[in-house]
Length: 157
Image 1 (cartoon, rainbow, N blue to C red):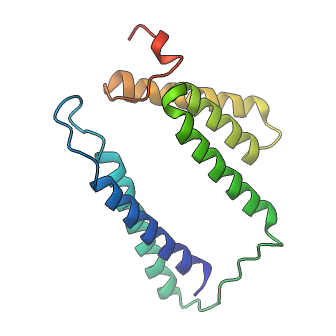
Image 2 (image 1 turned 90 degrees about the vertical axis):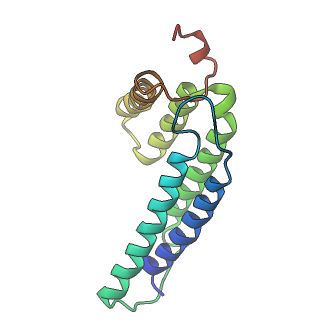
Image 3 (image 1 turned 45 degrees about the horizontal axis):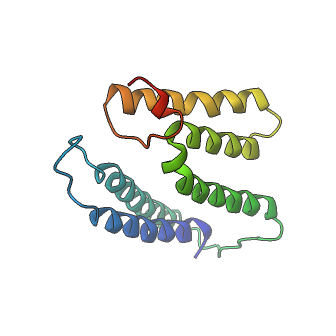
């Protein structure tokens, strides 16, 4: 098995677990009509479909080269993956207390500083504009619930 096929299998497995877990969410009778299930179900389904397509395309290409993960030579890539996972877990832990705007801004800032080195202004703009625009689109325009924290509790809406 090569990297693409292995990555496809991992995507199928993780997507199926994510989809199954999202199915366990309770049905919400009050609040917004979409409830907490819709987006996780879409993400799980897309991950499974993407994994299947990756496996199929890999088999059609006929590339039977075995996977060489090169942990030593690709050390910087694996370190970035590890720190991105740590950032994601930290983001999930602080999201409820910090709120969507502050937690997402911090997450985006640290992620872009790691990936997009040397472009401080661009990283700050991305880190501030992304959560602001998405908050405006989802929380204000679409009236969907996002975690309210320090900053959101001060807003008049």
